[in-house]
Image (cartoon, rainbow, N blue to C red; front, side, top):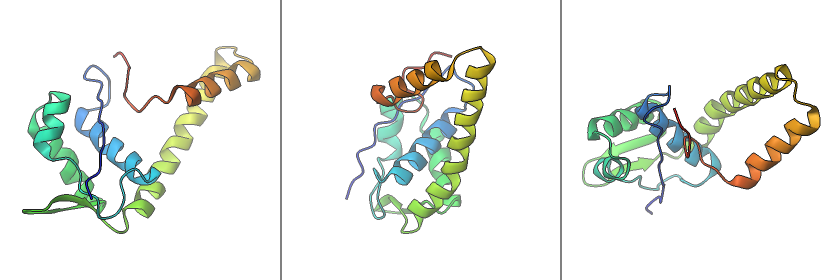
Length: 137
């Protein structure tokens, strides 16, 4: 089955584009949007969609293969491995929790009240925004 992932990148941000692609695939796997056996979009499709060099996408896919999240097979493409969901959740869970702790700490340091912080979190949840989407550098 083909995985329908819609990538977005922030070309001006501090995170390298290949890492943004890599992270988005990991998030898709961890959330179940990309399942074991699913085929990821081709390097050419992703590079055309994002207007980035194909080597950038190749690097992201190669890193994902080293993490054992995907497997590349000639004539088949890049597919999600059976163990990928467990690996992705184990890798991304701690990263996301740390980011949330840091963001809350920054909110507190700015003088925001717990109610204001809750309102920000609820607004973010309601927005449905994806990683790296709509950000300015």
